[in-house]
Length: 306
Length: 334
Image 1 (tube, chains in turn yellow, blue):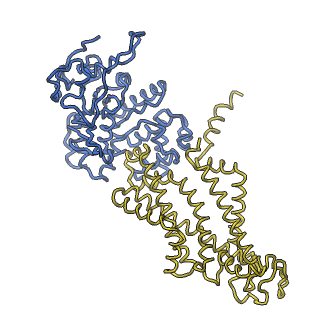
Image 2 (spheres, chains in turn green, blue):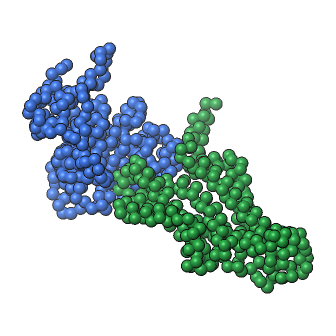
Image 3 (spheres, helix red, strand yellow):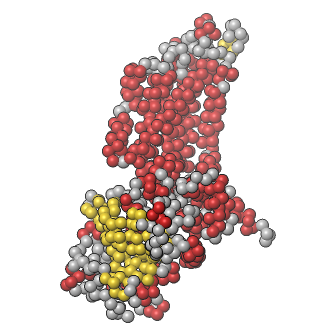
């Protein structure tokens, strides 16, 4: 009784560990967010392992049999005996395979563009806050200008100029999204740079760029992470929209949006599955990301902490 | 660094500030926060810089270390650190001095440590900012310095995040960071104000001991005269951006000559006057944006006369004791 308490409590107190750990613990307290996270993990895993999971490569036209086009869910494949659980599309693609490959493209485009935009936007935002003066004013007015246009209009204009393709869609999304990160990073950095720990770091003779990256940036991360999560969902939706409108990915490599668009013409002839299932896959993905993002926003909100 | 240092200089002060003026150029007008401040600190001595909020004592400290931000600017004067004018250095030359030869300790220990970085991360970075050592060596040095500040189990503290430490512990860590490079001068900006008195007493005695042992000069900025009485060798009293009285602690606190210093000492609550109304200095500190001509204290001063409409020059009233007043003298109310 006498020997234990002192050291025990001291070490327990110090094991509360990093602020990020606290955020993680807080995060797990929400069942809906955990559900979203698990679903998202499964989706990402399935998409990443797509070539080893699917029975048919939907991009390989040689594997497609036009005779199998527009078959209802549950129909058997005449050649291999494999069952088309979700039916086939107008080209005879197995929809399960097509959706998984579509998810792969959607996630790659969404996550990839959100990450690139995050890095570029954050660095520009930090640089803007650090430079101040006319550089800051110019950059931020440009950001305002960019954010004041309807996103879909801007995307259509850029894509009409760049042309189709996965790379071009990502480039477009990056061009449209970096501004959100830049504005948030700048605002946050300005707030943080007035905090005393920044003066203390300067008083230690630490260089300005090291202070910005090593001290200010880590304190700016929470809102940027929240924006990042929600921007991924936005990017996936936007990519789907663009593909649906026919300006996104090429027809030979359909993403979810293109699958929905392709099935659209058969909706009225009762062949609902071609559009419905890719739509459901998109819906589930977006909802899962948003559940995670909303919870992140709650646990990372400084006003709700402590 | 150069051959000049071979010449032994007798009694060169660690810091010699001459006619320092720092102003803030705001939209509402020019705000003279520090006006013609001159002070010097000898090696191993402790200077208490006293004044109420807004008197310019913190800005003086920030100016010495070159930490004044836009829209503030040092508009005149020299900050001679071991004979080298810090106001003339380039940004990177200044960074070599900051934290290395001159270190600063800030007021609020809750705010001066980066909340998302572990103590060891911050200390290792502070070490490596000035010394080309490995991370492991830097960490060992940090651990030794924490132990020097009377911190038990420094290894455990190093692994902690600031929010896991108590206020007193954080301030010890902040002081340890200031001590990492055994600087020649430490500027401490009210570092114990946010702590309770028992912790304050412990930290004061440890700082005092370290300063004596290492021959470090210390400027202790505070509004607390009792801290100055217990800690400092010399004292400078600031009012509205100027030093109104300076000298040794014994002289200034026992025989204050400036009516403002007397007012400050009189307004300390004391046992002898229990039950009586607490004394205060009438009136308010002047607005720095519309500073009156002449002595800034005149409007509140019991001794003010027509000459006070002019600016009093500092006068040496006794050896080592300077007063900026036309009517210096012992207290007239006791």
